[in-house]
Length: 98
Image (cartoon, rainbow, N blue to C red; front, side, top):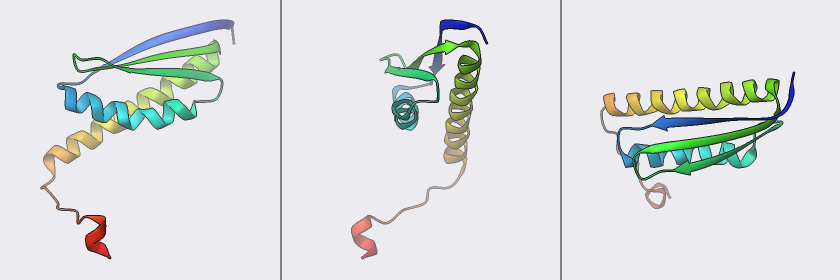
């Protein structure tokens, strides 16, 4: 592991602003929690992109953080694909379940 600081910027381009907002919301709790030895800042841009700025102290932490965030982005995209293919399911409002 090489001492740093090290950084990387990921740009996750979504087709539309609504999809970008969903991805930002999905990643926000993880970015706030922080991956060990790494810090990530999320930015939602008006052109349908989610920017991830990752900073670490060493290359091993950067590799781990990149793999982690790319995995979460892949999972979010897979969820979106399934959501577009699956028939609409009405979920009752919480008050209706009482």
